[in-house]
Image (cartoon, rainbow, N blue to C red; front, side):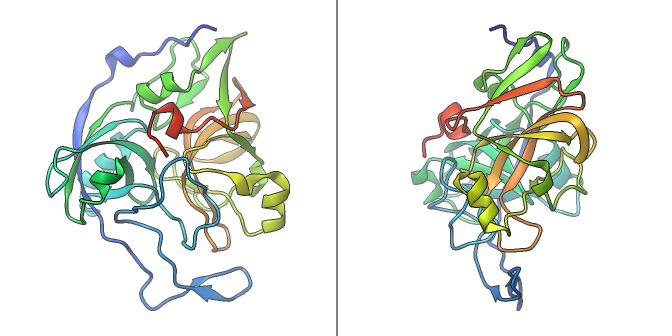
Length: 287
């Protein structure tokens, strides 16, 4: 099958830097469960040693658990937004300070911070405050023969690894699972180039019935009737292709995080379900 033509030869590659963050815990507060009880749980920011792309998204004793290393820059400056808006999934990263200096990694998600996965041996040496440089490329990427399809957070490396092909004027993509639009929650208010949208996982029986509780970090996800062009909204016939980037949550309106990669308002994307469609395999990240 022919691969769609891209404008990748015109893309600008730029270096942006971030600092490994410190883990965050809500000060003096419990994370509320739907039944009114609460818990103190780890999950966001810092270095996570035992959770990686390809691992389960559900079942951790944590909340919004992030794989790999979480990096950011000054939230009050344009550097923070450059790090978020210019980064694309599959971009290469380099540790430039600390005991793991010289180690290379791959951008695997964008949550409240940028998520980068390194080899386990490198992550064991990394500490909050270490600097990481990302060679960003992908913003501005288009498909000239498919103007109805928009790419979001998509690096050329990931696009080609996904094996997207064109047939009958439509694009065809493999995804690990399909999510119904009715369960998409927190993050609908954000634009689709900045941070993710959580699915709502509070109905555990529904998660099991639909097989969603088998979701893995790094899974490619298909959502019908989801238009993610200028935000995340319902549009009959639209299709969006997304990526699971963080783990489950006990909070109402929250659950595993789903980051937009491709969207077509007029349904110019078809997808088929293949449980192996995960960036741990597609980008050769290991598990």
